[in-house]
Amino acid sequence: MSSFIVEGGHPLKGSITPQGAKNEALEVICATLLTTEEVVISNIPDIADVRNLISLLQDMGVAITHIDDNTVSFKAEEVNFDYVHSEEYKKKAQSLRGSVMIIGPLLGRYGKAILPKPGGDKIGRRRLDTHFLGLCKLGARFEYVSEEKCYHILSPCDGLKGNYMLLDEASVTGTANIIMAAVLAKGRTVIYNAACEPYIQQLCRMLIKMGARIEGVGSNLLTIDGVEKLGGATHRMLPDMIEVGSFIGMAAMTGSDILLKNVGIRDLGIMPAAFERLGITLGIEGDDIRVNQKEIYEIDPFIDGSIMTFADAPWPGLSPDLLSIFLVVATQAKGSVLIHQKMFESRLFFVDKLIDMGARIILCDPHRAVVIGSGKFKSLHSANMVSPDIRAGIAMLIAAMGAKGVSRIQNINQIDRGYEKIDERLNLLGAKIIRTED
Image (cartoon, rainbow, N blue to C red; front, side, top):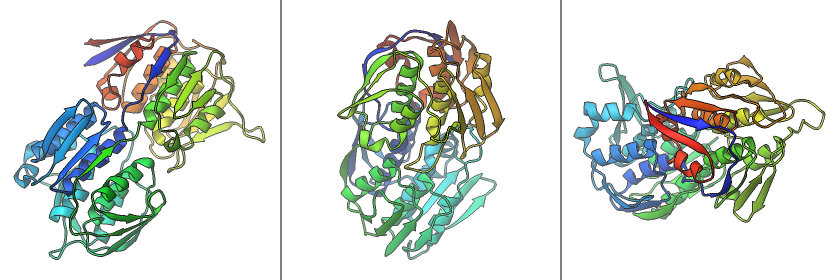
């Protein structure tokens, strides 16, 4: 198990460019299964979850060519379904949450797919009903084969057919799967209450380049007219908004002056404004963000004086992946804030580690925590911690960077799943982070 040894209290200075978006990468890489032609994707983050997905597609028979560190060519002329039925495939797919988005392309192109129960962060219930209900609206049927511990999904003999559907929730991965199945279905598919995150928009734009017919991109009402086949395309991914938020949080906690370059301002949604309500000063310079936080930040109350609340919501609301960062950054602010994590009931359980570091936090229930800010830098002290998931792990790293003393964070492979060479990149800005093998 690897660990970070973090010496806190060092301000950061310089510039940093966010990696490509992890959540977009998982969608668009799976979409390459929809065509026999070459698809070239650039700005792919070199992180564990993405490397594992690319490796899985390669084992399935997709020709993979690494053009450079962050550009990859995919050519899925034929999928080896013998491998898809193998124990090795099931084991690999189970270890990766992103594998769930393989079923839409396989069902759309081949009329069949297999899904072992996918892995990913242990942050509470992560149901797949939206995926299956949407695919069933297109005519697919599925069954759970208990001896294989897998879902088997099949299209009718005459193929998938377009249909109207109202999704039971605006699931991002569910919407992605349904879109990828629908682009090759016969007739028109209308998806209402579709997720409309920038990464879904990016998936749609790439599919349109490949020949798909999709209207309503950017809204929660998508209309898809199926086509017989898709071709190749080139696609550049967006910057990772969660990494942008992580860097803003690090700068605020350490009283730093850093420039975030090429952040994709128009696709950050409400996030910059939310950080400003937390009291953090952001300077927008074209497509860059300057964070120059020399003084402690003060939380804005609501206009009526009531306590500020940050809650996750479907786009364009605040991403649930950001709430762990907002929570830890609030521990040093002047004022109090309520963090309401609506989507996942296990995401706030890491706060006991922050309490051990001296943070004043009341965990009201699995979904809500009140943070009473200290109103000063370096109010936290060092601690030994274990990262339970990607977002809690980065929140622990932010806390350690802003704390007095030397902290140890174990199980950092969780952080590596979502952040590319994070220790090396932060050390170039003045952080003191050492990676060790326990």
